[in-house]
Image (cartoon, rainbow, N blue to C red; front, side):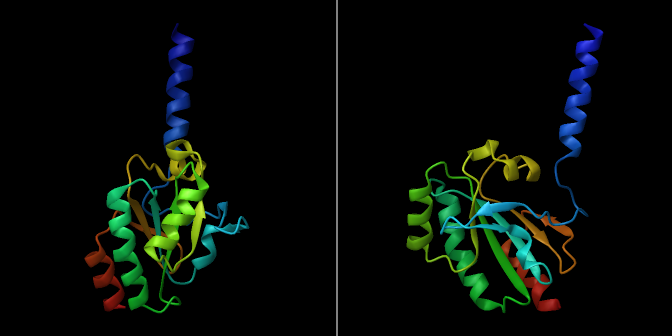
Length: 156
């Protein structure tokens, strides 16, 4: 019994330490883009990068997509890049949502919902969820508001 409890505690502590936290580096996770081509989500390093988790079925995500498109259009991609990661289990619905929302920034798909590798690594428990990395690729904010992002970018 004691061994089982110790093993459970060890497993939990290892899984918790595997999640990203402030100060950690942008991971080089490889996912499929809408064309089915594998690419790395760390491609935006060198600029501020906002990793945005969303899904086509998530109404708040769809509203935020429109706001993020406008935000991306306000800044040069050499200064600020948004990278979307969909947790949709249905690829077709994901691609249709990208088209309908006119998303103009890189999109990736991790099709296992909240059990997806990236969702677990980032500790995503609800959608939308976002993670802001600085130019060096260091996590500086979790779920920043759009105004927080604007203030940061306008001060640089």
